[in-house]
Image 1 (cartoon, rainbow, N blue to C red):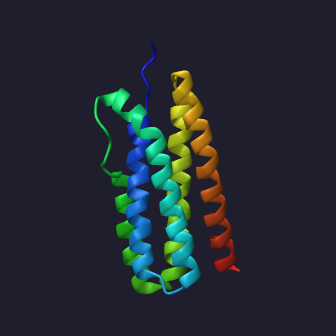
Image 2 (spheres, rainbow, N blue to C red):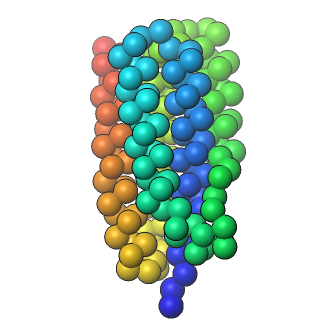
Length: 144
């Protein structure tokens, strides 16, 4: 039987994304952005719940840590926000986090996965793509 691959990495990135969105809620001034960020947190929590059983299968325990790459991006955004509009900086960097999430899903889908894991990955990736597209639209709207 095939063991799930790369699921823990996805969960790490999702957890880091949640932390970054939570920080964004504290920092941005726009209430609509705060609402969107909360929606993104909920979607990522839902994705983690769907994938956590496969992380347990993959490594024998649940994944709870965050990704170093996303943590570095958060620090970069903190520095950027000193020099420019917080809302725009956070949206821009969070759209990049969404890119990273999709990249991790693509990596996992390239690996051979058990059928139930493959199905969960595809379903969850659809939701994460919608999150990415929403953040991209926000970013484009703020750039205009």
